[in-house]
Length: 168
Image (tube, rainbow, N blue to C red; front, top):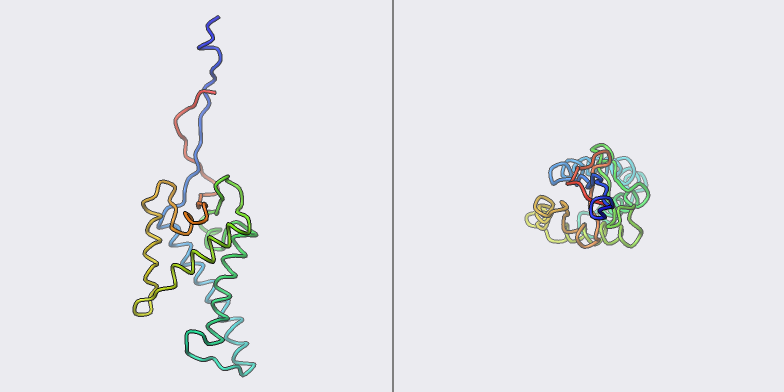
């Protein structure tokens, strides 16, 4: 009996279908609409009704509250659901390097540190470092800078890509 041929079974290998740059941009823009709605329904009315000063500075209480909503939305949705509402609509999910839902530390690094870096430097009121999102268009796993920091990636939930067959 020839051992070289009988020990191998060909089995197709499937790879994750990574979420590319443009679909992630669309999901992010939808998330920004959700956050704007949350701020418009919760934060601004509370400040107006309570008579709290709205302020106009970077560290005004209303700006701090809206920033808290922004970061809390991304952190909590990613931790508890593995995706934000924008990602849900477009069928995307954030996964850790092992393919599972990311843990607290991973989510905090990805969402807090990553989003802070993107929004920290502004140029004429626009986030200058947001151009770093473009990295998702050029990396093999379609990872943006915050994904690289946290060792996560964004995948399509319902599709996979067939790779070459492997011998088992």
